Length: 298
Length: 282
Image (cartoon, rainbow over all chains, first blue to last red; front, side, top):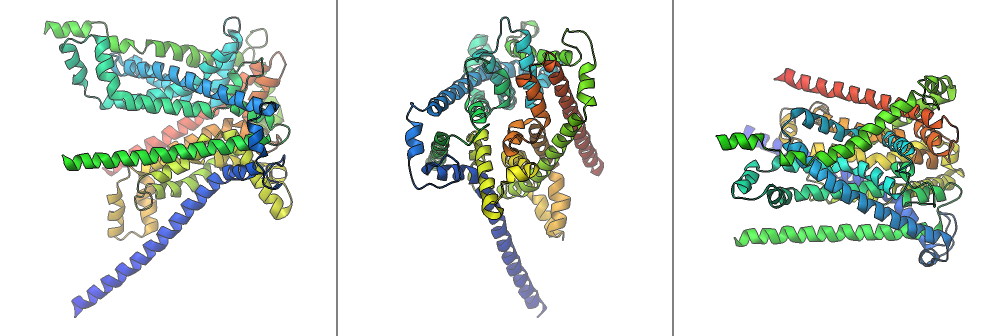
């Protein structure tokens, strides 16, 4: 008798637990989706109002594609500026990320293999400075440097790129270093013993092993550059009205609303990013599947 | 043996690769910081002087700006952590987030330029407050609007470190706590929170630091009515025409560096305490 009672109790307890965990699950899911909705709301808001032609974002003036047609009509001043700023943004991000990736990867390798402890410690500390420091202090320090060196390093595209390299380079080092630590140290020695030169061993043994770290460092650097405002404002060329997307949007919205074309621009950008994420997801799922099949066949 | 010894004394090719990096970092990270210090302690003629510090600290308005910056940053950080913690906890749970897709979905907005997103947010909350009460939130409650803007922009930065910490969490300990009779609240407070302390600290750093300097969000969300330290520094460097402005701006930057230094010290204190507590258990 007693054992039957225990079983019944356990069953009831289990059922209660399941109901409770189901309620918990619903609450948790609702919380995440509401948070997501809030994160996307401003972008969706702009996207929705890209299909109407009122000057102010937020007033519906009937459906129209004017914002899009104006975005591709270069006779508008704002249009010209937007595409110029977009081009500048991409150019700076890619150039700076490329330089940061090369310097940072070499730096990470050098720091990892240096034999003197103090060099390693100092360089690790220096790498942390731009990460921990407030961005505006980094920006100010560069601005001061370019003021003092204005004779041979006046504010120009070059100084802007230098600023963005400073922004991204620590992240390259920080994403390459762990890959070096995971590497088998005897591989390099083996390559050397088998007659490879140091450069060959570097290119054919070390670099292929740390490629994932290098790639993620590059991507991080590009991402940070694209979104940067403060360092850009303090290092960009002072003459010629040079702007990136960040500084252009800031200047354009100082007096007055977001230019109409920017709504269309944002909507297109949003669509492209979404599409890219979907494609990457589908591809990685396919890769995972084919990997599983290969394992099965083997 | 001799060959080994020779190899050890040979020129360290791989170690030498960090030379360009070291030179770059010295020229564009370390040296400029010394320049800022030099600027902060000199006048327009490069003579040693503390007049910048007097200018900065004798004006009551500056104290107010520093205080406002600090309070906004603290409130923003607190709200970010309170929202990000449960989100990260749910995302790190395989029951809800099977293949990490949800994490990416949280990161997608970061690919749209943050100035555009902030403007969108401003239009949205003004649209909402107009619809509800017929007023512009950014005009009538600028401080609230700034905190909303900053929480919106820095929430992903709080979620990521927490999430990264939580996926490393030992779930067996949570189950063990439940099996040993702890109710969910006790489990959360005594097991989950202590395991995620490093994540919480880095999430705090990731939101607190940038909120102090991001004056663009403050400008946009308050219609240029509220100043934070970032605005003051920007004004001194980019728009003021006074001879001494760069020196005063550098002084303000040092004040900011000091705040960062103090926060880092507090962070160290906390992590050490945590380690000590762990060591005490064993």
